[in-house]
Length: 56
Image 1 (cartoon, rainbow, N blue to C red):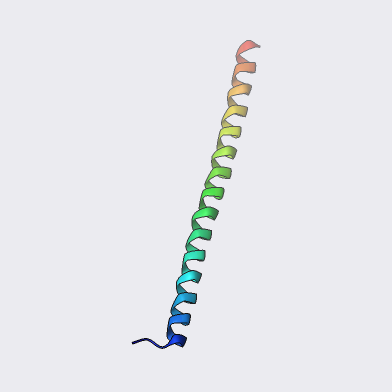
Image 2 (image 1 turned 90 degrees about the vertical axis):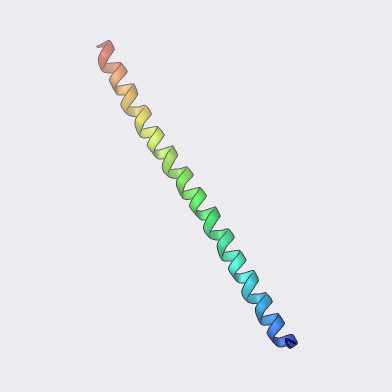
């Protein structure tokens, strides 16, 4: 049988790991979203330049 001190320690460790996991997943999603936005903006800028050059 676990003592109360061991249970509290285990609960704190579990909640810390859960918070770190949630933070990691959220941060990864935000970074990937920003990266995809930058890639799309750059691709659109290149496409716009190509269309302008074609009309000229």
